[in-house]
Image (cartoon, rainbow, N blue to C red; front, side, top):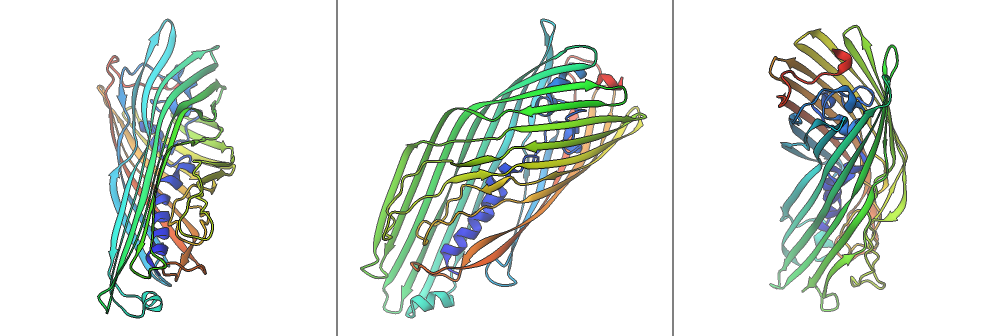
Amino acid sequence: MNLRSILFIVFSFCLMKSFGQQANYKFNNFGNRSILLSGNVTGSVTDLGLVYYNPSRLTEVENTGFAFNARAYQLSSLKLSNFLGEDSRVSSTNFNGIPSMAGGTFDLFGNRFAYSFISKTRTDNTIGYDIETLSDNVFESYPDADNYKGNVLLRTLIRDDWFGLTWAKKVNNKFSLGFSLFGSAYNYNGGSNLNHTINFETSKVAFYQNTIGFRQESYGLILKIGANYHFERFDLGLNINLPYLEIYQKGRFTYTKVVAGSDLDLDQFYDYNLKNLASKRKEPLGISLGAGIPINKSKLHLNMDYVSGIKRYNRMNIPNIDTGQDELTTVLFKEYRRNVFNFGAGFELYINETFKSYVSFSSDYNGFIENANIFDLSSDGNRDITVGEDFIHYSVGVDFKLPWASIILGTTYTSGSTEFISPSNIIPIEDDFEYETTTIDYSRWQFVVGIEIPVFDKINPLSKSEK
């Protein structure tokens, strides 16, 4: 397998950790107890996570003044099978923090309000490695090769910060309405750098370099509409996420290719720095329906979620470029999403006035049919490869209520697996590809440690329905 093939697989490997999970709509949860209930709280949320899951539930909690999301850390593991050939294995393990939120609630002019900041997405991945082995593929194309060294460096960075204001009002004793308006500041950039050098027995040196970079900026608004109704035996909640409204966008794409020394007829140098490209960011319509069902002093939480698909569109409009092929190369940067249905349940077990425990699960199906990938443009033809996984999330935890604070402890576990087609057995500048299947297995443990200390109240906020 040549470096061009390895670049493609590892870049997909990197995207699966980051961009691919942007179409997993329940991959991260927000709010101390909402995390331990796997986000199954549309009809029952009682913490600051209400600004995200159902703003109408703001009428059901006491003022907090200010509160932090539980601090959570995660241990994630990625394993690739058939990566460098049949029966080969490659793995990676990372330990880091996860996105969080902060904010509070207050009354003003007889209305309930909340303010919040959510670090919706935080991804910063860098993968780099060297190869110094003279493989059979190298000898097939360069039989007089004496020494070989290759290097691959890949990076992906995504930041999506939400700044929100929530308003809710009781229409009557049973029915409440609420709205959350978030401003989103989104930045997605990444790139790859591939180079390899071959030293021949004649002391001649051949060099190949391929560097790709991109950046997408987007600023816009996200509106959530929530409703909550008290039935005699349970609460029913509805939350509608309207499609993302983009206000400002900008894209940039860079590409450099150098081929030198292997043959005078093949020497190449191309350099592009394309700025102010038109780009789009689309987030779909979502509808969640949930119920909170009291069972004595405990509670069952049920949730169903629907997220609509998105028709195929150009995420960034990149013009065709010259990469040394017979025709101009088309740079694919398209996105296409399917309809997704998720479901989940959680159980809140009441032990006594100071202690509760939580257990939950939730499905998290990936919505991508096609997603925007960048890979080595010198390959034969920009195949569109989709990377994304279906996950199942599990959570357990406890909540200690003290006179001055609440302490939340818990853990979540996520697992999933996917397959994708990857090119193999090709060394530079050939047109014939063989395709093999690579399997990616992902697992994640999150460790949640949180404390809530109300600023303006002497007791920890509770759902009014629990008082």
